[in-house]
Image 1 (cartoon, rainbow, N blue to C red):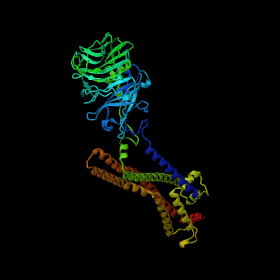
Image 2: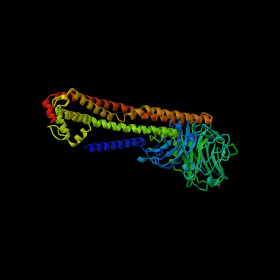
Image 3: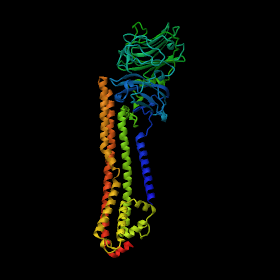
Image 4: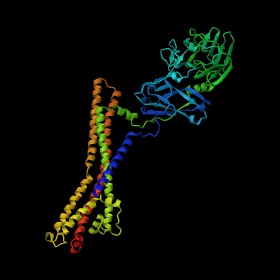
Length: 623
């Protein structure tokens, strides 16, 4: 029976330890977020919804402008120059091509172009069509891909955000400007070009040359310097053949002249004001040209594009004369060798304007995995000595949790076993002989039948252990004839005191068993914070030693080291606090069980003195 009981205890302890380790691993290693996360190297993400209903038609491969400012984006949490920006499709798996036109960390402004694969109004999966913007990875490298942001038909994209240098072609086709231009910071998108002082010549490259009757699209944003302004905004001439976009008393028009001198004139009906930016676009295909103003068709007519191989001019009819120049600012010049659909032109006008009705931002989300966010930054800055300290503390934490789990299970079993024994003790009317035979299984009393499970449980009761010790001592003294000068069956006061001393020694051993390993919790409570503080002090010393060696104070270098050093103190408190709560709970339960054992010893001795001072009852016990 004792072997079976020991085996049962051993298996129970192993199962409890295994369960505790699995629970610890689950809490330590599993991320708490129930949502998908593209990459846990990024600490933050923001949902961006695109509402294609504002366009009203399907669009594919759309470069969408994302405006970031301090109201929608936390610049302080992103890498310098936005190098860690990533844009992921709504499936949270597919990276999207993008490039940054401007990233200003002084004024907290950024303009990013992202190619969205598909927008379709009326499609439930696409309304709202969401993409994710990830940031918060200081180690990430810039992956901007201007060429990948546009399709193969796009031949030129001038953002005109350059300062003191020629315009750069973001389409990747190399159609860059050849001379500096007058730039202004107050442009519509990042920056703009002033063309009232000098026109800007486009390069004469094969990519910008047009064949006769070719398809093409020109689009740009303009802001007139004066009301009812006149002037040529964009022109491309080759002899008599020409294509011009201009204003006449503020009214935009398109003039297309063929090589033989035949001309087509397509004009809008409303003049542009000089206070706002306006989007102008021209499409040409199959002998027809269309003029768009702010995304809406303003006029169309029969006009075939002539063959044009010369350089175009932005802001005038000639790059060398201001006779017919446009007085104002221009921004975002785009040219493609495809007649873009009206939906795409409207989308550009809606998305790129001041009041962007296409893009909406959601609330920032923080990665909850231990490997990301601020925790990831701190853990990544912990030095080797810090990891040694944290490792020791984690070992102490695991030991303390194992002790608490085992002691809690032990005290719980003892409490149930004691209650089982006391119920049996009361059921036998405090008859020691009957109770002894019931426990041994050699006799039964009505109402005291025990199952095998109850017998196994009761054998773990300290009260039963002390009862058995007392009964054995009592039986050995009552079985002797005339012992201590007393008649057979009569106990002397010295015998009663001796029996009590023996039971008290058993009580002490039971208390020692209950208190075993509790010292490990006191070590965790008192030693954990001090070990953590040691790690913090060492980490701070190393950090300041590095500052001294560098010869300069850099808060960006100091802050991660200090945070990592403080992680050791946090680890020490994480060890001590649970151990403190567990210790107080367990020590209270131990005191309750100890008090119950003391009460039982007093009751047992008192009942023994009452029951065994009469020869008749003593002889019954001896028999």
